[in-house]
Image (cartoon, rainbow, N blue to C red; front, side, top):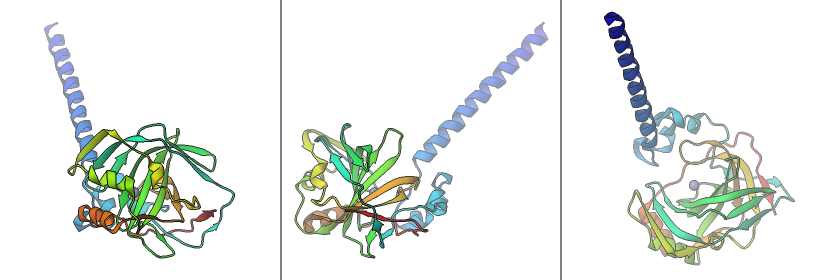
Length: 258
Ligand SMILES: [Zn+2]
């Protein structure tokens, strides 16, 4: 009887230790995935992303990667893109890779009949995409997700020109790296970031940052936006380069929707 009890006790202890061990393993692997550093220069530059984590393998092995050079687009009419953006309290994140503005739920875009909700918008310098082998000073990405969890990004090239008043509000409220600044009494409307003409290019691509996930619907306005020289300079002072180099097109078709 006593022997039986001892064995039972040992077994319970062993089980307990195994569970604790598994929990420890799980928590360290989750936190490791969340803290993998990547960047645009040095040993963590875009050509090294896939080597930084198994989770980033697509950055090297993916066949439908972004950004690309937009050229030789085929006619994609009559597809249309329509925007239903509402004002959102200003929430600016300085995440160490870019300046990002998180958007309140309820603003949507309709792309060729599919509805996506606006999650956030952010910026790259220089532009990530090229149009006819030309880069722009910056690029805006409006990131959307539909009910199935699929992503659609609406992008716009940004050239030097007239200043943008929404960007003035955003730039004034940038927090320190790693921080978020919520200005609940300041409303912004992403409609102020859309060009007059809604003609756009579309193609199937990926996230342009790790983990470089594919299945992202890309939609790039033909008409560029403008920011003032001072507004572009202000961003470049914080992020000199935060653009992934061009990726091979691998036979993908780019459509032009007028
Ligand atoms: Zn982006």
